[in-house]
Length: 115
Length: 112
Image 1: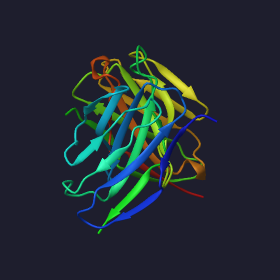
Image 2: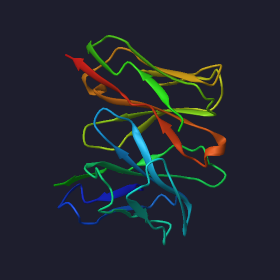
Image 3: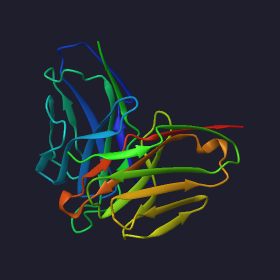
Image 4: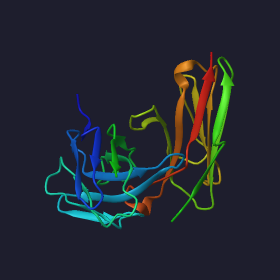
């Protein structure tokens, strides 16, 4: 079955450490996205990528970095510069290209706790 | 950035009741989407709306794309316990390169 896989489901880190969240999709989608979700709030866009080797900052990119070396993979690094890293992180993909308004397909998220 | 105002923030209803929630924006969107999120999981698409005035159903769910392109509503008829979750609206604009703007969600609790 096609889908998006995020790993790990739960991640614990000490303050000051960088941490990388994995996101892999086998839907052959061109576009991939990272969202952050905090309790009682909607999803806020961190970074997105419309094509391999290209990505754009979203609304809350500070303290995060991404790469898009392969179509299937879009890892997110939460750096020590991110002031409030504890959150639920969601990766998504969409067809992209000429289907730029296609719906998002989401992974099941990674809950990051930084202490 | 653009904001979507989604209401109500939460709803507590009895099984069998109908539910209505809506999203409004000060900006025009070309696509409206409704997602449902179960606890600890990612959102799943319920309904996608692509034309102003469009009314679309998916089982007990009905959603409409407002004629002004600045609002949308979602209705759930005859609610059941598995309808529990967080419902999000999302808007897309053609110039946004596929980015979606999300509302803050409506948390639905259904009492058996």
